[in-house]
Amino acid sequence: MNNERHPIDFSTVLAAAVHDMKNSLCLLSQTIEELSLKVEDSNSVAKNHLATAHYEASRLNTGLVQLLSLYRAEIESLPLNVDECYIEDLIDELLYNNESYAKHKGLTLTVEQSGNLVWYLDRDLVVLLINDVIINAMRYCKSTIQLKIFEENGYIVFQVEDDGKGYPSSMLKATTINIQDFDISHGRTGLGLFFARLIAGAHSTGNRKGEIVLSNGGTLGGSVFTLRLP
Image (cartoon, rainbow, N blue to C red; front, side, top):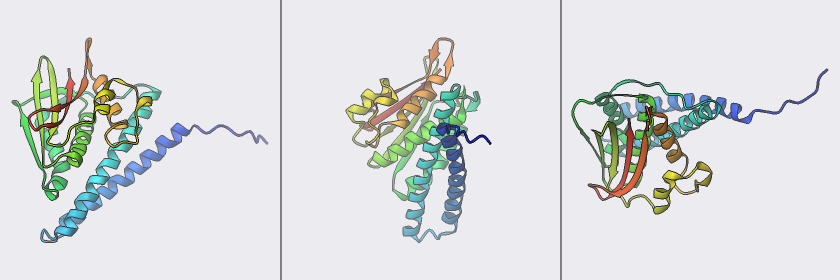
């Protein structure tokens, strides 16, 4: 009888566990949405708690998807499913994902889109990325978030601005460093930023690659997140 113990591939076990947790979280989010529809609009306290629960579930789901994608990127490369995408449909999905929480927190989320844009990109990953940026903006803004989407010099540009205090200087510098150098104990640095750079860089055409840029100011005076894809 062979009693030799084989080492556990922890990364594979973790990936499987994350996948199961993501499925459970999806069911939880659906339950929260169904409960929200059954609660009377006059019950503002219950509505507010449900909106917050849905917001936190969205954040958890984003984190789990990021972990799975980073695992897959390590064993091969970040898998992209590039296809024709109608940007107006992408915007509708982003608004649907965030309108409940924004409404109950009294936040204004506006969209500026130039024309009827159509682009080739990985819709699921881009929605995940921009949705995560909007979720963070809702946490740190005062009252207003603006999503701008336009074409510029052969790139499609997604820009999320808010009227908060802006990005800390440490995060503005973090766009060019590796994940090992991040201080992930502070709210707006770490995995999300690394993941955004990974998604952007995976989109390429010829010698052009996608990129992200963080800055402060913009039209609302707070943080400005810019995603550029060729």
